[in-house]
Amino acid sequence: MTENFVLATDEVWRLQGGYDFNKYRAAGGDDPECLAFQDMAAQGHYGAGGGTKQGIYVCAPSGKFLAAINSLSPEAVKNMLESGLDAWNKLPEEDRRAKPPSAKPNHRWEWSYPEKGLVLKQTARYLREEASKDQQPDPRFNFDFAWFSPEEAAQLIPDAPSVGQQHQVPGNLYRRLARYNLLDNAHGETGTYHADEVLGKLMVEVLSVEPEAVRIRISGTSTATAGEAEHFGLSPARRIQVDLLGFGEFDPREQKFRSFELVGKGKIYETSTPKPDEKHARMIGWYFALADPDRPVDRIFPTHLRAYDAPWVKKPKITLQDLQSKPSDRKKMNQVK
Image 1 (tube, rainbow, N blue to C red):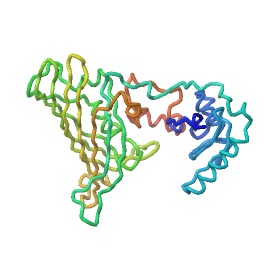
Image 2: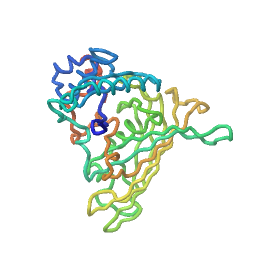
Image 3: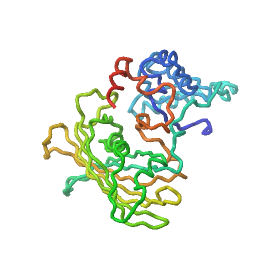
Image 4: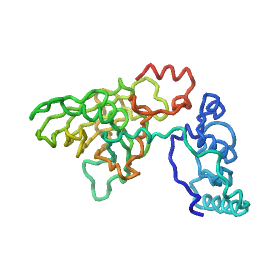
């Protein structure tokens, strides 16, 4: 029976059809996987209609609904799974082997994976300056990724590098990290910043130049402050200040990084005032290193890839913004980039 279980991830709002899956379909949303899930989940605990379909579902490979629940109770989930198994056992053999009309997706964010580009795996965790004997370090941590195309990665290196040369990383590449990765995300997903809410830069110093390697030192600062502009979806922390330091080795012949490490140490504030309360600041750290392209788990797309302003990122017919906001809201959002 294990062959019938499939682990999958997706942009949940597109999977659910946003606030109204009928409008999703009318607007051109026709991904077979999304349609199958919407029809199946409509028979579950939340019923038909739009909005969240969060929970645990049991269904046949054809998409036939068997059982579902949304609960934190292990006993309740156990009972639901047993009910789903009982419903499975009662299915005729032909229904167990039935397949959906189509299982081929119309879009996958992983299809934009930048082969030969700079793919960074991010580890975020909360920090403490000092941990007393009765105060253990915060155990929470989280992973994410940052993607840069081969052409973007090459922009981290000066055109004609020489030892001691200083080079400022293009602003759009700095802002990608500041807006979508340097977030209060050690505990889980969080909102992003608008472009005009981040201030800072990344600088590169050339340490050595050889035919097979250009070694660089990376440093910079970043301050992100959530302003009055509306943040769609989850809201980011009010203010985050970050110091960054890292090193990399770029192969000019292969036009790719052979090594890359970047560390960010930040303070999170609950207010956006110019002189925030240091007493109540929370410490957070981020570590970026090269992801392994041969490990499927290291090819998972960045949480906020949908927001990348990059032509090489392939997007679905219906975007997250289309699903979670009204047309008037999207117009306002497009004016703040």
